[in-house]
Length: 113
Image (cartoon, rainbow, N blue to C red; front, side, top):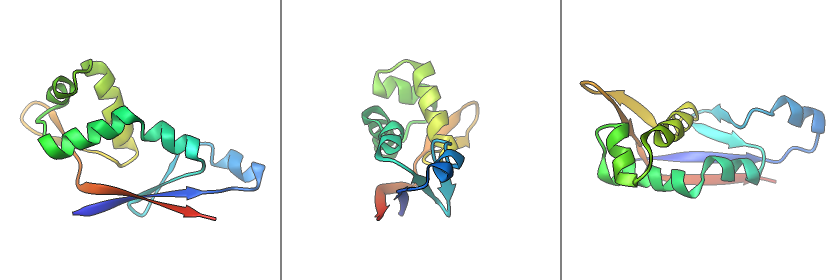
């Protein structure tokens, strides 16, 4: 089982920070954020819960996942696409639907000082 790596990069130069204003950067199978605030925006309580449900209960579609979570399908779909774009969730096409998949069981955080 893979481990997903998230790095926290502290930047001193405000001009450099401006260049990295995108919420996060994907690198070498990991994710780099520049502040704890960005990390908490990405890994909210609901999104962590969603990752666990995907991993443990293996829903066959986003709609089934929404039902398992007791959340509106549209909101779950927005979260899934967000996590997909960050590389935290895979979407696999099955017969009619996209099946969310998480191929790791840990998220590791490394902080550069």
